[in-house]
Image (tube, rainbow, N blue to C red):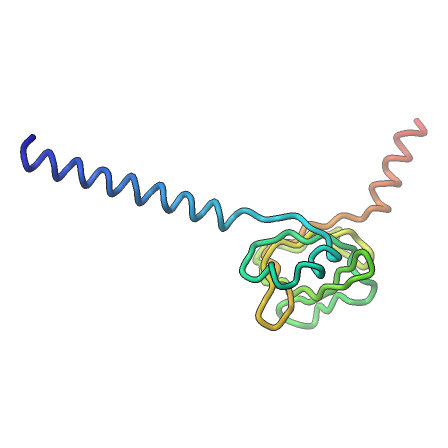
Length: 136
């Protein structure tokens, strides 16, 4: 094998290896575990640096839209979690006091959950629509 072909072969191997490594790292960072606020509280020490999805109910009166970024509290199983929304997406219309919310992000150094995404749904709204369809 000539020197030029060997260089191309080695270069190709390095490029494929680098792409495989970047793909693996990207996949690991995008992977998020889904837990409740109660489970989150129980595993406090094990969540540092991990991307998580945490589910809970938005606590009545906790949404503070005057702060930038937006802050609120979610609750489940008698435990509360302060959340700071640092994402860029528009906040869903269904995000209100008492709605069910799933936030995705990481715990910050200050103990406040830094959410990059918010998914929200108003359970009573969907239940009412379901009951209407059931009565037809």
